[in-house]
Each structure stands twice: as C-alpha cells, then as structure tokens.
Image 1 (cartoon, rainbow, N blue to C red):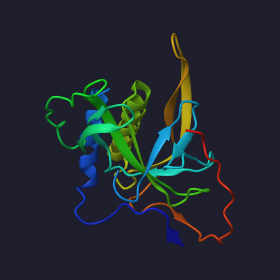
Image 2 (cartoon, helix red, strand yellow):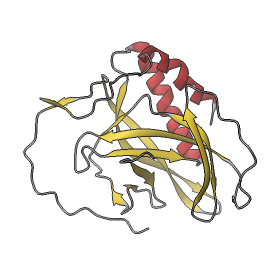
Image 3 (cartoon, rainbow, N blue to C red):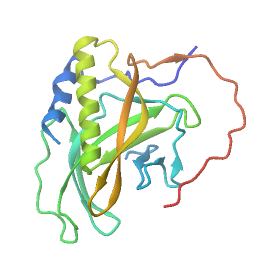
Length: 209
C-alpha cells in the first residue's frame, strides 16, 4: 500500500481552522514544479506549457490549505503584477495597477490540486482564475470543503473530477465554465491505493493553443 497524495506536514494550521477561512470565499464572488491548470475556450481542461489535455477519467485531490485570493494585472498576454495570499488572511492592499494593465487589478482566486489516478497521476497543478464562472466554481468548492470540515474534520481533502458547464453569451456564444465534482472525502494522508505495475505511457493529446 502507498499514499498517492499526502498533504500532512509541519507548520500546518489546525484542520478545524479551515472552516472559518474557507467560508470567506462565500462572500467573495505557481511555485516551482507546479503546472498551470486551466480550461480552454473549447471547454477542455489542459495543463502545462504543452497544453496537455487532462485525462477525463482522472480524479484530483484538492489541498484544503492551498486556497488563495488576491489580485492580478494582465497586459497583452503577460502578467504585469500579482498579489495572492491565503484565504486565512485579509485581501492584500493594492497600489495603482501597472499603466499597461488592460483591466487594472482583477480579483483572482486559486487552489492547488494533485492527480491521484489515471494518465496524470502524481501531477501537481495550480488552478487560478479571474472569470465569473471560475470564481464561482472555487467559491462553491471552498464552501463544500468548509461544510465537510464542520461535519468530519478527519477527512478534509476533496477528491474531485474535473467537469464543465456552459451558458450562452449574447456576444461570444457558448461559454464554458469549470466544475469540481466531489466524488470522495479522504484524510490529509491521502487515499491509499495498491501499487501499480509501470507500463509504457500512451501518447498524450495536446490541445492547440
């Protein structure tokens, strides 16, 4: 038996404090080795510089201590400034946005996940978003984890499947939004699974940028 994901470690706050911190999201509409996870305009989940498409059957563990909020300023395809802090802390105080920022400072939420099975097993990703649909998805996920912590603090880690929803925009047509479908709750040590025999990995599909 082995632990696929282990979020336990030194200097973590008590699990019981998660509820208060995560409930802040209800009122609010990457580090080295962590890939950027996002949903592209066609509704596909992709990660990394190569835009690798996520295995549709995979599930992901959400690190309950990784929720962050703050602001980001985008230029023409590049980040001009970003200030993010844990949801346990107040939103950072902001100066004027960089002059070249297209929309000034934008509210941003983020969370870290680790794949626990499928083609992407062991992959660490961070999902950050400024879109209305993305903010609501993280907000809802945080609220569900907070409720779970109140109910059973021994299992605060949500195992999720990455899904999608959509709505029709008057000007832009079909707009896809992320969905985190919770399929299981586990402890901070992560789910226990049998060791698998290593096999040659199949060629992965890349999405066009």
